[in-house]
Length: 268
Image (cartoon, rainbow, N blue to C red; front, side, top):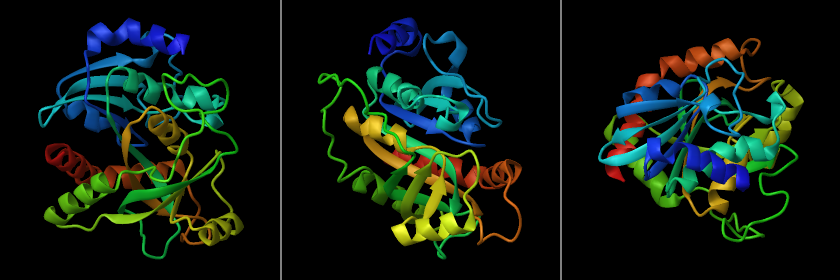
């Protein structure tokens, strides 16, 4: 908590108070550049902010406005598989919450498990499976930040999901819905693991998001999660999986994704 306060103190003058926080995942970070009056703060200039080492994650905290809302966006994230702790993975989300954000829009690239999904689909996350083996709530709890025992019955806000679905329909496409499973990584899942995940109720799988959502809900933020289905998961896809393919698919649907995000901000 002390580190979080130091980070806020270092950047609050440059960011001001914000309304909405965003985490922009693999290949989706360019949306932050479209914010009105966008100002980027490299993670390296923020005390205690962990740095991303993954291609497609620029590593900037960007502030600006869109649809009359004051936005702060993480242009890229860090992951457990990079050697970070759960606290470090959730640090950026907690920092954005301390800047005043009351809503989090979190995005990611994910592998599709459900037969209803195909590469290029966008999926609103209705619930999550935290299969990382850890939690961003482990350790001493500060009751001023959130409760010791957090109710996760409603991890993702139904009203925001309905809003996003309505925006997508108005833009001429269907926003799919499903459960997101977050795993440690960095290896992609085996076909057997994908079958297991399907049995557990997962519709899509990735290596991020779940710890960030836990931290956001702990601090009282409403959450909207949207996955870009970048590929079908192992055993369902036609060929080997690669990060390059993930980025290629994210780039292909970038325009649709950005239109959806802008429409949601306008409708909020």
